[in-house]
Amino acid sequence: MGAKVFIDGEVGTTGLQIRDRLLKRSDITLVSLPEDKRKDPGARAAAFAAADVAILCLPDDAAREAVALCASLDTRLIDASTAHRTDPEWAFGFAELAAGQRDAIAAARLVSNPGCYSTCAIALLRPLTDAGLVAADAALSIFGISGYTGGGKAMIAEFESGESQGAFVYATTQAHKHIPEVVKYAGLAAKPIFVPSVGHFAQGMVVQIPLHLKPGGAAAAHAALAAHYAGSRFVSVRPADQAQARENPQALNGTNKLELAVLGDAATGRVVVSAILDNLGKGASGAAVQNLNIMLGLDEGAGL
Image (tube, rainbow, N blue to C red):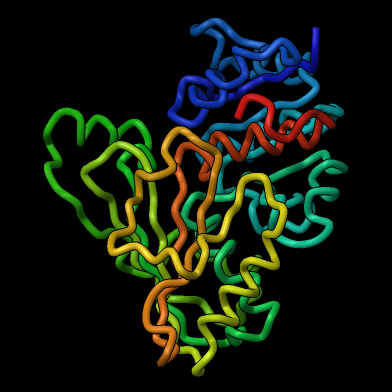
C-alpha cells in the first residue's frame, strides 16, 4: 500500500507537479479530497490525520493555518510556501546544503521546501562562504531569470493569454520573499541586492552572482564548489574547461538537477558563478518529492 501522502493545494502549479510525480508510484498512496471539500476545514483535518506526510502547496497564511490544523497530529509536513523557511523548528529542505542536512531532513517532522531562486543562490554561495572565498558581509548582487510558471496561476494566465508579451524585472524594492532564507543558509551577514526577472518562457531558471576574486580565486571557487557537491546525485559542477558562450535557463527542464558553473575571466578574478535548474523541478516540486523520499527512508531519486 505504501506511505500515505496528502497534498494540501494539489490543484496549484506546484501541487499538480508533485501529484503527477507521485501518481506513477506504487510505494505512495495519495490521500485526496473531492473538489467541493478542498477548502473545508473538517475534511482537510481528516485528510491530514489519514496521511503519514502532508505537503503544503499553499500561500503563506494558508500554510500557517494548515500547520495549526495539524498541531495535535503526528503527521509529518513539508511546506512549499515561504512561511517557515527560516523557522528554527523546521528543517530546511535542501539536502545538499551541508554535512548532516540530509539526516536532519530524515529525522524531522517539519520540513520547509526551499524557494527556486534561493536554492540556486544558496547552492552557489554556501560553499564559498564556508571556504572563506566570499566574506559574510560582502556586498553581493544576485541576478536571476525564471520561467513564468514560477509566478503561479495568475502569471501563467497572463502570459498564456498574451497579456504579457515580454520579459520584465520585478521586486524592485529589495523585499523579495527569498532574501531571508538566502541570508540565513548561505552564511551571509548582509542582505544582497537581488534582481529577479520573468522571461517569456514557461519554465527553467538561471541565477548568477558576479564576484571580484583575487587572482587564482576562480580556480579556488570551482574547487570549493566541486568538493562540496562531490558525489551528489542531483547537484553537479560543470568542469572548468567547459565554459559556454550562453547560459540556457531551460537546459535542465523536466529534471531534478541543478548545475553550477564558474564563468568569466579567471586571470583577473572577475567571475560570475552561475546556477541552472528547472523552477518546477529542483526549484519546487522535484525538491519536495526528494525531501519526501528522504523523510520516508526511500530511494532519494524515486519518482525523479
